[in-house]
Amino acid sequence: MKGSLFKGNFWSTDILSTIGYETIIQHLNNGRKNCKEFEDFLKERASIEEKYGKDLLSLSKKKPCGQSEINTLKRALEVFKQQVDNVAQCHIQLAQTLREEARKMEEFREKQKLQRKKTELVMDAAHKQKSLQFKKTMDAKKNYEQKCRDKDEAEQAVHRSANLVNPKQQEKLFVKLATSKTAVEDSDKAYVLHVNTLDRVREEWQSEHIKACEVFEAQECERINFFRNALWLHVNQLSQQCVTSDDIYEKVRKSLEMCSIEKDIEYFVNHRKTGQSPPAPIRYENFYCPQKNMAPPEKATGPNLARRGPLPVPKDLSDNSDYSLVADYSLIYQ
Image (cartoon, rainbow, N blue to C red):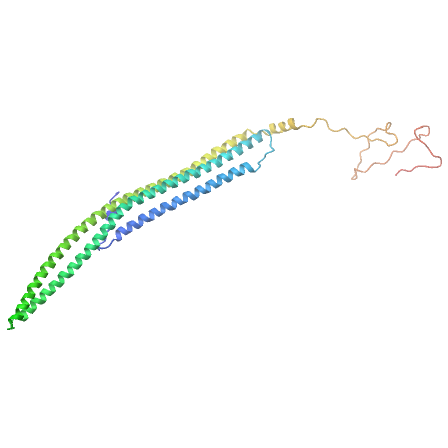
């Protein structure tokens, strides 16, 4: 049960021992250290998220991504780039949220530290008072025991001098015995007084120890609960980041569903078409008779398609004034 485990399990039979208290303090120090480690983890994660968000923004703004696309696919890409920016902003916002959570953890640690300090000061004073009073008591006990031994020795000396005839020596022994008895009584009273004082101090220390155990156990319960909730909240924030990113990317998927291959092809054709008529065939033109021989050249067959075909055999054009003939000579064209 809360407030009962610590005070029932951290004692020692040695009145000077503080092992139970020190064990609790060490545990609380470890808990505070663990909170600091988680705080540092959140800060580092925030730096990572912020850097990722800024890098993503830079990538979206500086790196081309299908910038020459047209129509529906272009619109889908614009949605994609915008949503990438949104994802980047979400990561930057998450970084700010994580830093805020780290700040809350730091404030919680410092609050517990101040609360603990008050109890620790009280306990340190109780420990010192108990230790000092124990020392005084042990010194009083030693003094009392020594006075008792001195009295016993004085009594024995008186008994041994019973047969002595020297009255002055006997008188001295009786005076010493009386003095030792008085010293025993005084030391006994002082010893009893210190024992009673030590018992009162011990009870006060024990009461403060119980209070400290209750305070420290309550603090530890609070710390574990706070740490657990902080970690739970952290993973919820990360999950929400994933959900938000998926919602953002869903907008991209929906824009891609609106992308039409046929419309983009038609858009390209309608806006970039260069004409609907192919080029006319290239006609053969005879160098000597360009106007009369307009028949298309024969298509070449075989592997050498680019080579010009054989020249046509000229007709007898002796009556044609367009040609000049030289007697006894013939022209051979190859």
